[in-house]
Length: 417
Image 1 (cartoon, helix red, strand yellow):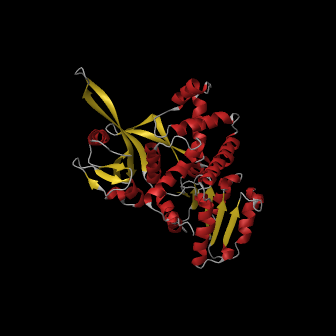
Image 2 (tube, one colour):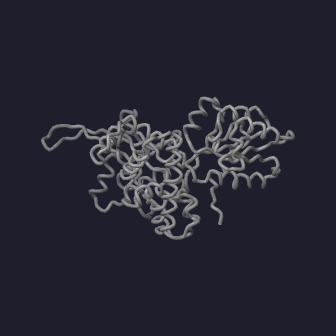
Image 3 (tube, helix red, strand yellow):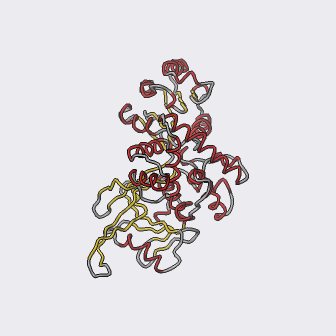
């Protein structure tokens, strides 16, 4: 059974022939090559594109290693173009080519060449696209399988699918394995042998143990506010290691560039401004997070929060952490400021949503706690609480939309119920 990734395939199809270089980015092994060389390639053939008009170069293979040389790649592509019909260049792992920016810029001048490239490092792609391509690079981010994609392939009941997904995540190759032991081993090998080795080699890191320890600390504290100085203090107090905050800041940027983690800034809702530190970090895939800490600490609350964050970013939303400052009287009757957190401030165009993640709301006290920050937001944008499990969406007496996790994850329109 083929894994359907129609959401991304339709994005690629809609961007055909737009005069831009289509950059397919994302963490390694999330399915970028499969998307380009299987799904999109087959789409081209099904739409009457001749096979000799599709130029495929996979730079991470021995066969195409020579095309990492920019001159050889340029000559090869130009030699393949024999007429004025449209040609399609599918170029995999472009960051493995030296001076790839100038090569791709050169391809932009070939009018009958539509270019698609993949890459696994945001620093090679996002930053350089802005500076080198001058607005002619078109980035399409691919993520590991969303829960909806995973659920459709598994064809099992909701609870069983959720229990598996929250532990092993959505890396596509997991479907090759049948047992928990095999799945865990695959993820741990992927984490150590692919991601860590790649990051260490690319950034010339001398002390790999520090990087591993940092990842373990972040994995153990997903959804918690932190910053480089706080992490440095944690290394000192719990690991008895002296690592400077600037070094940790660099390590964090390396992990972000490899698409392993995502930094989420705080936003002062009333003051309408960003607060740069502290921030939160979420893993691109919860299975990779769990593999990092040997599948310990399966806190359902934090895993659910991480999955919700990933789902929102997959849908194209800009996601921040919200903060609302309120004035309350303390036990002595004195007024004092209190900071209330909103799990997610979600924006897309003119739309905005304020979202709280709550694994369960067993008591009225817990409900008031979840509602408090939302009810202190001084605007009329929709306020939502996502609750674990399956339940029909409804509006409570405070006008807050209550949505079950199942409906949120499986319905793209769930925020607009």
